[in-house]
Length: 233
Ligand SMILES: [Zn+2]
Image 1: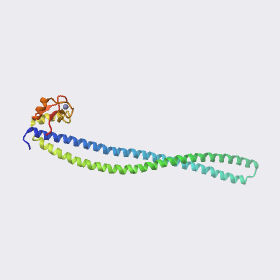
Image 2: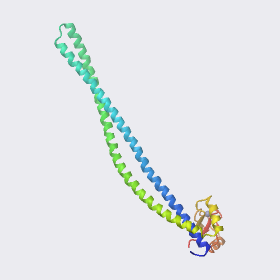
Image 3: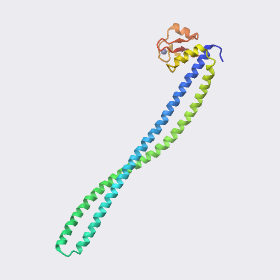
Image 4: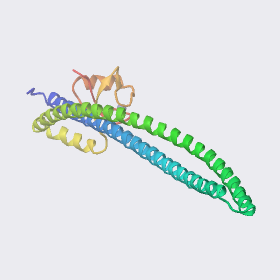
């Protein structure tokens, strides 16, 4: 361990920043993972809806076919009666009823055709959604497995940084540590490197005098955001 308190502090701050970065990466990965799951759930709902619609259309189609069958049965029975009718009056009455039934059958068959078209369209849509679902499920499975692997690897990295952080914490100058901890309560990155003579967090230009002090390992606050500044080694 370097005996210069500045370097110990810097090493400590570096671990703190690495922990933060690692935590953010894990949070983002978990968010991405959840997005895949949510998208899959949405698609499942779409499929359920398509299945229900196709099922209802099939029921309507079956009911319509039954209605036509009843009409045809009645038509057959009337035709039989007509053949054996005993009086012209009865014959005329049966003939009138048969004409009405023929018209009814015609109307109901047109309706059946429309219902069949609706059913076909909905069934096709259901098949397409089902196919999408199979693909999406496989993709989500593969991608969440990949994300899980990345999260596990990142958690190992986080553990390593945390262990180093905990170790370094014992060696940091107590005043520096106190200052850092109290600043950390207000801001996630209280100590940042200088980049091109400016604060790397808020991009405020640093005065020459401050730059000299920073190079001498003094912890100088940024005049704009008040973060403590250091020059990367
Ligand atoms: Zn700043």
